[in-house]
Each structure stands twice: as structure tokens, then as C-alpha cells.
Image (cartoon, rainbow, N blue to C red; front, side, top):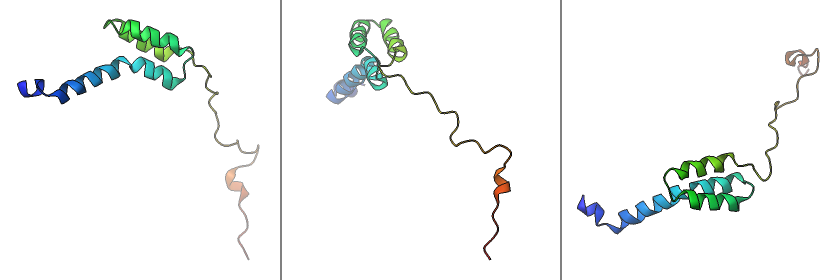
Amino acid sequence: MTAIENSPFFWLALIGILVFVSALPTLIAIARGADDISYLILLNVICCATVFGWPIALITAIRWPRRYPRPPAATHRYPPPAAGRHRHAQRRAPYA
């Protein structure tokens, strides 16, 4: 165990993972295109000082309103068939 503790790569990896996890709420807010990202960054910096505040910052980053709302989801991919006609009724005569 002392070989791992004395390795500088172990400590660099550990610090890198902790920095990534602590910055995760800010990264999520940026990826979502949240409105007023500066407030979320400030909240993340203040709340990450405690273990209990980090989940609050994470939930806030996920639920914060977007700058540009998503367009409504399409309900149909293709237009509906014409009334009274079925797909199989439109068969063509074979070539002569």
C-alpha cells in the first residue's frame, strides 16, 4: 500500500477526479445551456466547500431553466395515411 501512496501519479489522478466531481454541476449547467450560468458557478463554488451542499448544487444545475427552451417533441414521424385508404390498397399493376 505504501507504493501506491508514494506514487505521484496516484495523487495526480485522485486530485483530478476530485476536481472533476466538484465541477460536475457547472459542467452539467454548461452542457444544458442553462440561463445565468454565473449564478450556478457561484453556487457551485460556495456549496462544494461542504459535502452537503454539493448535491444541492447538482440538483440546481439539473433543474435550472434553459436559456433557450427545447422545441416540443414531434408526435408523429410520418404524416398519417389518408382517410379511408390503407397502405395495402395502393398496389400497382405489374409491368406488362
